[in-house]
Every structure is written in structure tokens, then in C-alpha cells.
Length: 219
Length: 242
Image 1: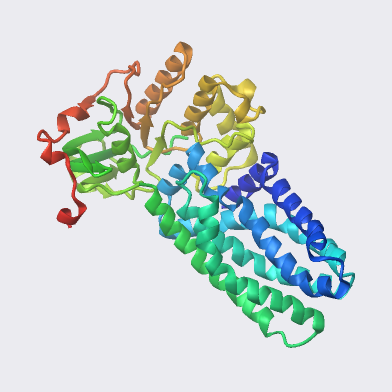
Image 2: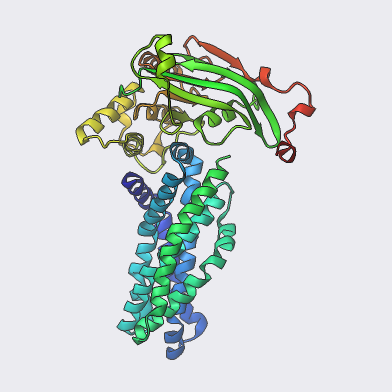
């Protein structure tokens, strides 16, 4: 399984696609947002965490439809499916999601504090936002893996994937933004715990559901 | 490499399959044992690929059974009766579809290394792994291309690498879907040789192909013979089938 992890990360980096595109998209929309919202400092400071969370979500979803599609297209998904039962497929999805998170989402998170400072020059907020992204974005990847499994057989499944998974992601966005604000203000940490709970919950449910979906789409 | 059990047998009984609401074949039965090759013929759309995918375990048949068994000690038939050990479907076969299952952006070596590790339960040592990969590449005369990205190869070269994947881990049964597509004459000859060696080592081959493999087939099936004869018989109604 470490083997699959390494292959996916290597393929992700060499493709030049996913990482670069998601990161560039993330950076450019954040830089663009003051042009739309105006230069009111308090407004930007208030909107900062929400904007960053929302754009991070979009950037993560951007390349996620390819998670299983490339494997399906080149034929390796068939071999992986034939070789495993339900539990090993669940682990396979978990590993692929982890590889996607490391290769695509981690660069976004690394860029997030700098981008946060662009909107609101406060280190405390930047750190809080980054922490909330680290804890919350895995949930998005896991939910997205389910969508990617359902749409693996479809050409241009990206939009359908977004429509399918966005309702499930609502709680992640709510608690992600809330956790970031709460951390920065130093108030109660409940939103952060909820965010962590969501990541753990979808870390279990997402891969299992995706494994089932892949089994069905093999036909 | 030579971890194939001494005597392996696959028994297919009364198999029926559908695709898109149409019965492709029914009452398909045959059995195959170590050292034997079955060639599946049939016009386009008769279900050759579906049959291979069924055997690979990618989806269940409408009806019928696929049994795998092995006997480790004796090769003689009477002893086999007592020593039949049922085998799980996973880890039994190599499935080669029309696609080569390689990542275009990775090098040939990285691709094969991935599959070698995927097919081998116990991690090989670095030297041993290198030997397996080199041997697999050598068998298809592609050792000189190991460091090129897979995407840079020609169609026939890609197929050769796709075929060399079968040699990165031992599996008794090879399920081959048009293995010779895109291969030149030299490539086809190399592949015949690879199959011959696999059979000699106690392996089994089920190949769906239009082009001759260069090997005498032990069993030759034409799927058109198993097609429902009446037009009504061809329709599969999932509601009626329950």
C-alpha cells in the first residue's frame, strides 16, 4: 500500500497537472478577491477565513474527479479491483485519498498563511486558519473520493462530482470557518473538535462507500 | 517466480452472462488444468471480454460457477480427488485487457516496479526486485527502454511492456484479451515464447483473440455457439430474473 502511495504521489507530481493547477487557482482567486470586495480592511479581515476555506474547497475539488478516472482509463483500476476484496479496496481508497491530499492539498495549506496575510495582516489569524485547514481538508478529500468513485466511469464527471459532494461538505465548511475564527480569537474550541470529528468520520465512511461504488462501476 | 502451485485447475460450469440487458452466452462449461491453454473465439460483441472479466472476478455471472482448485503434491488424477483445495479468486489470475495498465508519465521501470510490489506479498530485496524487473523487460526485449517515460513508447512497445507486467509476479492463470494487438511479428513470437514458458511452469492461459497465438490450443471455444438461439432468449429482464 505504501507502494500505491508512492506511485500516486510520483504520478501526481510528474503530471504537472493537479498540483500546479489547484495551487495556481487557489492563489489567483485569493489575490483577485479584494478587487471584487473592495479594500475595506475590516471587511477583508472578517471575510478572510471564509474566503480561504471556500476557495480551498474549490481548489481541492478541481482535480479530484481524476482520482480514479486515470486508473480506470489506463486499465490499472481493473487489476486493483480484481485483486482485492471490500476491505482491501477500502484501504486502497484511503491510501489514494491520502496521496491526493499530500500531493495536491498540502501545497495549498502551505500557501494559505501567506495568502491569509494578504487579506488580513495578522499572524495569529493566519496560524489559526492553517491549523483549521490541516484538520478539515482531509474530510473534503475523503468525501470527494466517494464522488470520484461514483463518477469514475463518466466523461467530464467533474461538475457532477461537485454537485454530488457539496451537500456533504457543508458541515466541513461551517466548522472549518468557525474553528479558524475561534482559534484566532482564543475562545471555545468546540468547532475545532467538530471539525476533527468530521474528518475522522468521513475518513471511515468515505473510503468504504467509495470502495462499494467502485465495485459497482466495474461492471 | 516459480511459485505457481504444481497442479491447478479451473472449472467453469453453466456460465451465463449479460451485458446491457442482452444475454451474451449461456450454459458455457469447460475446465482447464496446469499447462493448458484455452482460446476463445467469436465475432465482435459475442462476449469474449465479458467472459474474461467474469473469470477475473470483476463482476459476478448471472448464473453458473467458476471453481479454482489446486493440488500441491501429486499430479496423478486419483490423488487429486482427495487433495483438492479450493482457492480464492484473489491473487489467482493476471488480467490483461486491451489497456496496458501503465501510468504514461512514469518511467517503464517505475511502472513495472509498482506492479511487481503489488503482485508480490512479501517484499523482495532491492537486488532481487531489480532482477525480476530486468528479466521481465528482457523477455520482451525492452530492457533498453527502462528509463523512458511510458508515454514516449510506440503502440507496439507499450503492449510489450503491458505484457511484461505478467512476469512481475507469479499467478497461475493468465487472462489475456487480444494480447497480440499492436505487436509486430518479432513481438508476437516473443509473446508465444513467454506463454510457452508459463505453460511449461504449470500455468494456465485463457486468451480471447482473433489472431493466432502461435501455440496449439488445448481447448478452442467459439462463443457464438453459446449464444441464445431465439431472439426472445437474448433478452435479460432483471425484474423477471429476480
